[in-house]
Image 1 (cartoon, chains in turn red, green):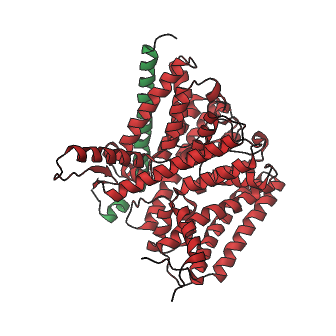
Image 2 (image 1 turned 90 degrees about the vertical axis):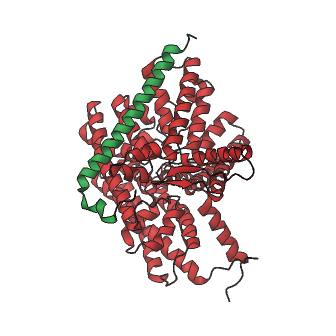
Image 3 (image 1 turned 45 degrees about the horizontal axis):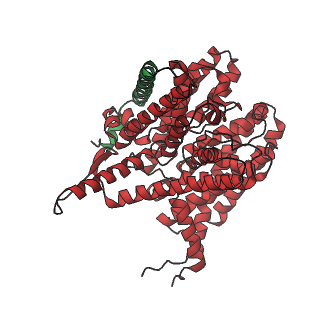
Length: 507
Length: 49
């Protein structure tokens, strides 16, 4: 029988030490909107960021000074640190949001911070269209910090060594190590993000200026939309999301950025290194190509049948855009929320819900169950059927292509994929049932919203709004946290708490 | 398929970057063109409701 050891004081110090580093990093992130606020003479906002940043930096400095330990980082520590970092990070990130006075309750600010960091993109802010620039910019910047992985952001800045930190990275559900050295992997991810930031923001700026924006305002919208699109977040500087722009150019650039954001970093690396063929062979690309084509047919058929749109342009700009927004887990909207209920019939919204549930690629900024798991689950099903049909003595081997080589499908891989798939479905159903319990919404609305929240998408059918019930807001916040960490780190945290309470003392 | 570790660093970073983005734009435009073709087919064949 295996015995779980009770973590000692040194373990807790180590966890606190790294959490402090993450908070210090978050404090540095808050300095950016502070500068924006000062530049725009938004004094209220500036004081909020000064308070938020100094609190985060002070806690970070205190933990750095008092919690340093020689204990080595293990896998279990990594999981616990990451699970806690995302929750405590969101709480600290919510401080300046709450101080802005635009949220009806501290929980609403926490919801917004979690939504930003997990790149979900649901918003409960009051009167977004008249929010100070610094506050709005901060929401979008958090998507970038969260999308690129806040722990990796911090550690690649602070840490000098490599291998021990890799466990933190994997706990963040980003396990693909593209380059042999971990720090170089982190730098590559920043290089990709940085390059896209320059190119994407410039392209959006041109499209916005062309649509009649003043150059300065166009820049602010362009960089916000870049963060929201490339990091598959889905916030928008305007309450009406993408509808506000009425620009095909902006929509097309956003679609390109969303597709880039949903591509795994491994595939970005392959494209960077003259191996575009990798795209065609990868199980994940193939899965997404099949599922997205199928969903497009259903969305198109559903919309045509319900007579919502009857021409190619409208179907492309409303139907296909929404599908890309769902698959990439971004959540940009080109429809008012209740349009899905009133105008879209039944088939098209159902396909959007399914697309949201699957989401994008593993090891990208996208959310959802992930195409890789769906592909593996399908391969496992085919594998079992083949084994049933073959003679008992036959050795059945199934392979798939991922991460640059052909791999053998192992039982553990299939089991892990099915387990996460089931946990996601559990999260979706729980969210939907809790929503129903409030009695204000029907099952179509609550299921749509719960999938959108649980898979970190952000397309809203209208359940999430500034005046929604607080209990539901709390459940949704936890769902976003679970979805972003793909459950495992959170369950490891619960196990760790159990070990603190009941584990055997180390002798 | 693995490249030697220093091969990636030896080449010019700018060319790699341009190539990476170039392929991605080609991919995204390809996806959009395929979607347009599918939608156009559906609109053409869908009976009037």
